[in-house]
Image (cartoon, rainbow, N blue to C red; front, side):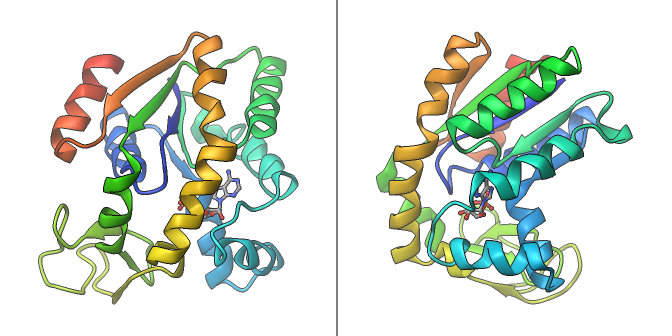
Length: 214
Ligand code: AMP
């Protein structure tokens, strides 16, 4: 099962993607996580990506496409995978479709998690990320057992630079301009499904499972 998660930044697609990956035992491939790991490891890719990410801008297509196309051809992706944060532009989607076509494969579901803009800014200011393992939480909707401490690895939680309100507004503009057209793209591919992302995360997940099959 090859799945693409769509939705505005902060729509909760990362949380849902992790739950789907767990249930269906497929790898969760988050380009944002890959960039953040590169930033913490001080790689050249990380240095380049950070300059865009901190401004709420997209990293250029050429820095992300090859990385994902290589990743989806690794052995653990044979049964399928879930892409979270990729594609984010029409050229990225076209590059993915082309690469998969060469392998005789295609995206099975593009799941659009719908949340209106006004909910997003409110949500994102409550988001917290672990400095070490990248797990994300929300102070109201998905709190940790101990405030400010990651449940998974015990390290400190922070408000990411790109989750700060001014950056979030910029990211929403970028989303509407460059990523929202993917809804039409995947509708035309016949694989778009939509879920209401304003609901509780467990309800959003059951709506997704209803679509994907138990
Ligand atoms: P995310 O964690 O998915 O919200 O991604 C955080 C940031 O990483 C985005 O705001 C972009 O700057 C960058 N990024 C992640 N995925 C992509 C992508 N597919 N194309 C371009 N930039 C990306």
